Amino acid sequence: MSKSLHQAIQFDQQHIWHPYTSMTDPLPCYHVESAHGCEIKLSTGEHLVDGMSSWWAAIHGYNHPQLNEALHAQADKMSHVMFGGLTHQPAIEMVERLIDLAPEPLDRVFIADSGSVSVEVAIKMALQYWFSIGKPQKNQLLTIRGGYHGDTFAAMSVCDPVNGMHHMFRHALCNQRFVERPAVVFGEQWDPNSLSEIQQTLEQHHADIAAVIVEPVVQGAGGMRFYHPEYLSQLRQLCDEFGVLLIADEIATGFGRTGKLFGCDHAGIVPDIMCVGKALTGGYMTLAATLTHRKVAEAIGQGEGGGALMHGPTFMGNPLACAVASASLALIQQGEWQTQVPQIEKQLNEQLKPLANSPAVNEVRVLGAIGVVELTQPVDVARTQALFVELGVWIRPFGRLMYIMPPYCISSAQLTQLTAAISHYVTTVAN
Ligand SMILES: *Cc1c(COP(=O)(O)O)cnc(C)c1O
Image 1 (cartoon, rainbow, N blue to C red):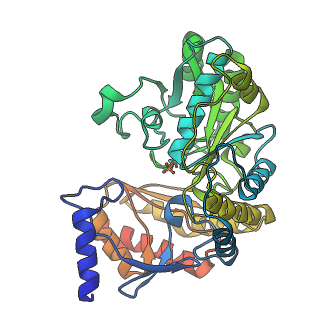
Image 2: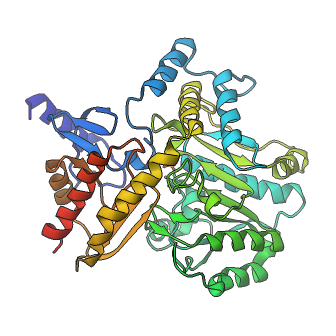
Image 3: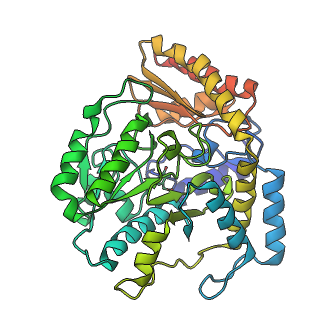
């Protein structure tokens, strides 16, 4: 490693926080020079096949010609103008495409700056809806354990209370209602009793509950678990029966990742409020959106409280982000993901499922372009990461979970490199 590169990494360690890490005892970081297609190039020369899509986001791969073009063209016109009192074509075009893709009748859109913010906005919409129609006492949220909805405070309040960050911020968090996570996993025999707890909770407390918030079918950062879509369709019915809004957090599941365009499509349901983010810009920059239908939008608009939805970030509707998102959504509309994702799923099933026979492995789960190897023991992240870099792959495990969700454009050979690295870990290190 050159001296200046070494110094740069040292500076980083001393001065810059990375996600969920300590500043006094940080995990090592690898210095990236560039990324192209499905490969990340380190400044030390290694090329790594990307297994993470930079946390569900880079679905079309890095340095995509159409996304680059959209970004450059927009930068030459304007990078940003305030969204209060002004509007522009990148936002209008992006929202047109989003409405076209989203299930009907979700056609009212709030553009947010990150996934967590879109969850805050979704919660605000739900609370403001009930406030507007004269039921301000409906101000609690109900959710299932094992979820993850972001790092801001309202979002944190509905993350899993055990593996989320509740213990540290307990006294500052809103007190929400939790039920056990769905007992029946994806692909197993449906059990009609699965909803009895959530049904009871709704029966007893619906007068206080504004909305149920869930990640549809795939619980992501809270544990990478896949549950039966029937849970979602019956939950939709219960929400209607008890007059509670349903918020679907599609930030990880949206745009084809699970094999359907949206997670909710596995159940054929439409939520009242839906959050999208992560892959919205194809992983280029931060942008998210909260969608709802006319009934919620109009109630807020005409209701007590002046009619305005009380949110408005400085960089709302950022034209650069909207232009890239529009280009990414255009690629989704072209539909190549519909052949790519099933191919990835098939290969993940063939190459990861056999690992379930290893004593070091608890379970292997595959859905769409997501592969999860749940180990019996937690991973030593620093050591494992170094091993993976040596093997030419970028996979970042957490806890007992070794998982990949590669860009959709990954080649079969590149995907084999990812699964072979996981196999290598399971057969040599973990055993
Ligand atoms: C990542 C994620 C979020 C938070 O999005 P950020 O852009 O990181 O704020 C919320 N919900 C789900 C399901 C996510 O996967």
